[in-house]
Image 1 (cartoon, rainbow, N blue to C red):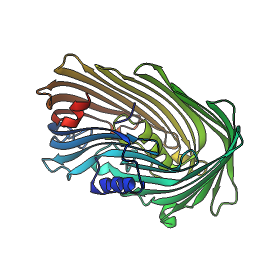
Image 2 (cartoon, helix red, strand yellow):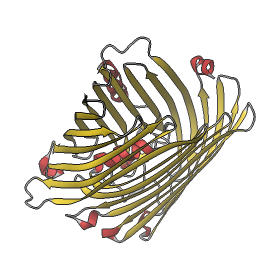
Image 3 (cartoon, rainbow, N blue to C red):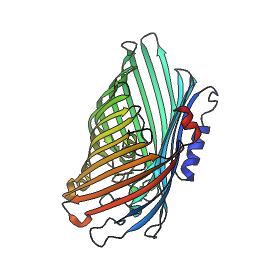
Image 4 (cartoon, rainbow, N blue to C red):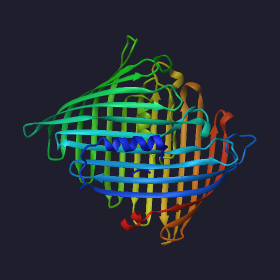
Length: 441
């Protein structure tokens, strides 16, 4: 189950990314799902302040896109969801809110030489201590691409070498950076579905502005990796050591590297995923991590927006149901950021997301959404808790058009009440589903 556009520059990057995959076979099977929407709504506290709330009328124009094309030589997977938002009473300028993910793979020599590309676009908060609103979010793009070489050494042993280049760009923060990653491994096939390998990796991070962003650094790892893959799921376990080396700092930081990712189809149309780990990380990786578990790409990610690397302990649980009349997605997340050089930045994040869609009849459908987000800023002695509820009822006017009336409630509580607020929004949205979607149903 996949998470569910971007400005022109994001669309341009997606098109360029697709064109970089030379010779994709014309016979590749493809699925395309899209919908277009327009809506009007009203907020009773658009500034999200505790006192003197300001009301605002809002109009939106949106698009959703889910494209998957796969074949013998490659794969392209694109998911995008976004709204152009206009604030009719001019409290804020119009903006685009949404995100896109793209993953592409092309096999120059099957099972030997591949090229991978990943592109992420979305928004994150500019100031994590303030509520999410139009003047407290910025665009983020993350592009990663590079080759992977696999070499068989007899019937049981294999070697793998991969390299990638990444560019992370921020709309406001001076944190733009480039990174070069190199990984090499040697392993043994334990069975047709299981492998064990020794992996060494290094990632070099260089900031465009060293004065404002901070020192460049290397993030290195050496670990054993166990992988198991079968038609109903996969398991990957990494265990080893991790080392962080900052330019201009004599002392190195080291610790355990641990990662586990397990995905299982527990029944037809029902999937469970569990993940946990401990490693050195940074805000670019955290943005990627949050995008990969987001239910709605229109969400603004809660990222600290600093450049200093940190020790990150995390755990995730995902559960999804995709049946004919019911769709459910549940995500639970825990993340601890421990900055060894500056304890004032330390924080713990806990998030729980729920989204349920149910077709009551062929014409009537309902939606329920809920989110809780708790953040404890350990060095600032501050705890914030955000709660969001969504209730919606929809009606298929024709097989092409639907109408959806929704109510949303937002609430923040804190042990420092300067940022507490309540907000309620009501929206009426009309959606259009093109012919090609209905042909696949």
